[in-house]
Image 1 (cartoon, one colour):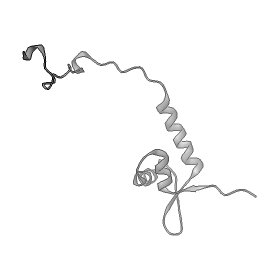
Image 2 (tube, helix red, strand yellow; image 1 turned 90 degrees about the horizontal axis):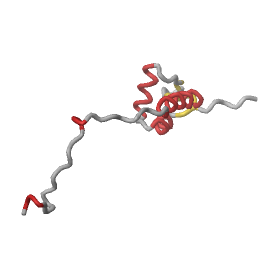
Image 3 (tube, one colour; image 1 turned 180 degrees about the vertical axis):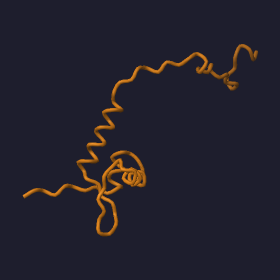
Image 4 (tube, helix red, strand yellow; image 1 turned 135 degrees about the horizontal axis):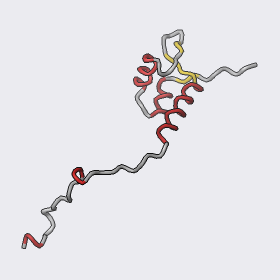
Length: 90
């Protein structure tokens, strides 16, 4: 006998992705994530599909990127703190 596939609520999926449950519902509406409607009209998400999406997204995000190179024009000089006495204040 097969074990039934586990279904997740929008709240459970949201916790995995660190997003709001409404975002998960929008993903389903946009077709990014499949969902099943319960007889009461609530959405449920297949656990395997959710973890596949999560793994695909985290693989993309975990690839090493080259270090960020800042141009000198974007680097601010340190601010003068007037509360500290300086040589110019004497």
